[in-house]
Amino acid sequence: LDRNRGGAYLASFFVGIGLMSMFLFISFFFQAVLQYSPLTSGLLFLPFSAGVVISAGIASQLLPRFGPRWVTFTGFVLATTGMALFTRLTADSTYAANVLPSIIIMSLGMGLIFVPLSATALFGVGNHDAGVASAVLNTSQQIGGSIGVAFLNTIAASATTAYIVANGLQGQTPEALVAGFTTTFVWSTFILGAAGIIWVVLVRMTRRDMASNDAVPAGMH
Image (cartoon, rainbow, N blue to C red; front, side, top):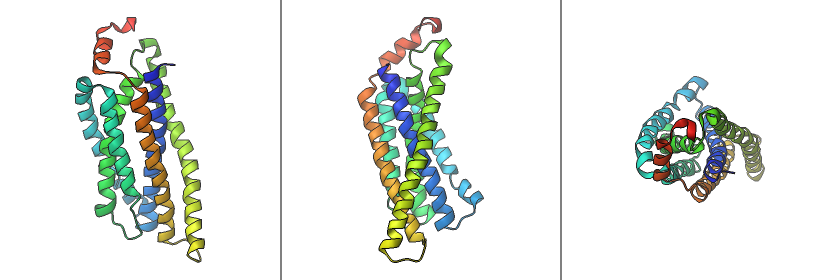
């Protein structure tokens, strides 16, 4: 019933879909198309973690000055842009030239999303409800990821099959697989974009609201 908290939970749901899409299908791309081992594929995601750490620190500095609404919206713009760049992958794409830039852009966006998202979800919550409010935020993201995997896997398989049939192939090829992956990235781009719009429409909390909330003793929230 709380507009800001509801917006945070809904945005977290869609973020889960976008994140799982990126991790799952880029992992498939690394192993099935670029022929990297599972270990190497995992290591290639390390720049994403570094980007999130850096941008989360920036978000912590920006949040008291600008409030969560536009800081997070900027994060959604970056994350959506990074996801959109994944739609341009081909069977000849390379990690350094085609995948890494998208991963970095998306990671910077996600860091700007995670910190304000948590602050908004916990805004005005007393100590006795803080654990529940935080748990619902995490659960929203996990549910989004679970539904996203099932939904987007179906789309990827259908797109790959359609490519095989349309081109008269005998089975899966790197080009057919990439056709499925990029189709899911198109869907994920729209999903993250919609999440950004939902966020900026629902969340109205300002930096003044945050300052006044911090000024109230914890037991009186």
